[in-house]
Length: 167
Image 1 (cartoon, helix red, strand yellow):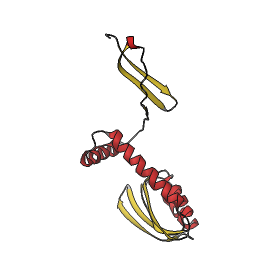
Image 2: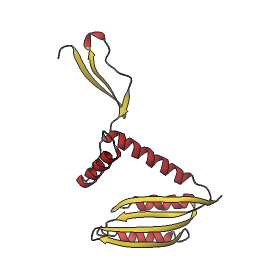
Image 3: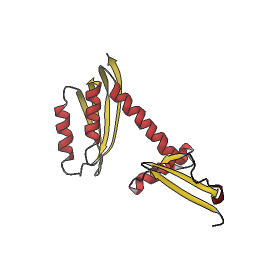
């Protein structure tokens, strides 16, 4: 290999890479580091993501995923840090064919009736339903409900939009 080396160091969740450095320099490690992850995605989701990346002008998936993760972190932390009363909507899409899911979703809404003012259900097709749950109550309780719904098997998407109405 003509005196060049590529060395990848893995330190916990961080990968450090040295590339194209002549071996006679003794330098094997670059101080730049990135965490590398592997995820599994349905092909259609990846295709949609790639199209959105292209339309948004991203040159690679990594930058788009970094932006999406930052947005997720900001939104998640903001929702959980809201104090006092909030009003908003929890929007969720799910597969009604997943056994027991609709029962779990209805039970969760009945358990949280102190913060749920109403809900609207829309059948999109055989494998997709869209539900909007209007909420008003303690910000932490709203966030807790949103997270509970998001963790259910068969739920494809959850988005919570809320604003503080009082302290």
